[in-house]
Length: 137
Image (cartoon, rainbow, N blue to C red):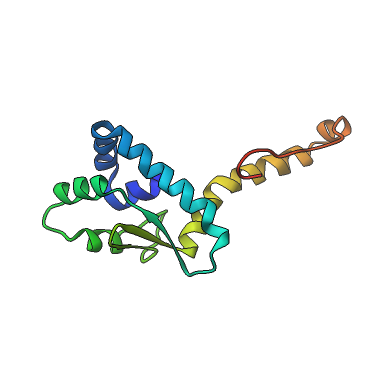
């Protein structure tokens, strides 16, 4: 999620905001976590993350005469993708594809690691159970 925000607003701006407002930065992360948990509960084309007003004000003060909605809508995110993110009032609206790319970024290395373990005969010979734990298991 932080990489997504860096793609939209720039790494320098995000680092400056983190240093200036660590408590609001934490709120921003918490809002993303809340939206992430609700992702599979909703059957919609976009899923929103509430952006703290202090964050939006900080961004607006830093961008040069551009509308924040245009900055978000025109951003290239997560590699080469455009038009995956919009801003609607205080909500950052992420397309379903954007969410899937965010999940894939975290899940793909786990899948590769598990496959590597399962392809190692030495490990499997002594393994009776394989258990994944945590929020992505």
